[in-house]
Image (cartoon, rainbow, N blue to C red; front, side, top):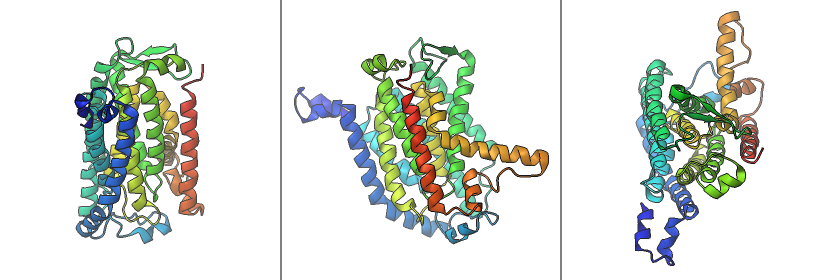
Length: 360
């Protein structure tokens, strides 16, 4: 919205600053951060009063989680509210990629909100039926995939770009949309599975989104794409403004989610943020890089898949408990120890993902 102030500029005054993505990125970050600090306490108070017993805690989970009983959930509302406000204020609203990412974020956020509401109101872990959640998620992802493909350059439409092998494009044709749907829905559910300890999911999400934001900025500039030998996609640089809102809102949320958490993110936040990561990857043609940058989420999801398949076939477990962060809890690791070590892993993977921009 603030971008429209450039109409008042003569090219050398204050209003000209709003032309620059970097200036608006800083504005989006600070807006989202302030939003988080201002609205965090009242939102938590409202959630605590409305939810009563808070998020249901699994009786078969790690013993240390019993102390979390009564902690309210749906804290993702704070993050989504912050990034939505900052994006609408600071991003160019004539940019299609901004609306694609917002569409996915809000769509998955609504699914997550419905799931959280069902869990809290019924005080059980079932929530919205899994098949319905997946069906709605795939529907949202399908729209986003078609939408993104329509604004990709003709030579990149329905193509899969590979990191490192940058002259290679795989023509997915009609399979591009199903592939993109899997990327978006898979990212949403992987982040959802990771959100099991105080502060565990939000920091890796911020790290991954910041990395993808840098990639989006690079991909949206002709000079950078020529130097780094990556594919140019006009308009993706604006996604950096959205990412700044996500990081600012994420930091504001982490202030209240740090151990011991005053509020949980819930599916409202984890599905929304995971979906956003997938949508950014599809928009920038960096779906494979997302698997690297978000490698922590991939491992969390794989640990559940492996556990379920192995248990059904043998009646035995590979991990003491899945997702894998609970395995380390069962082994006696302290919760902050697991969280911080997983943050470090997420940061290392992000650096590897960024390195693919220059590898030839």
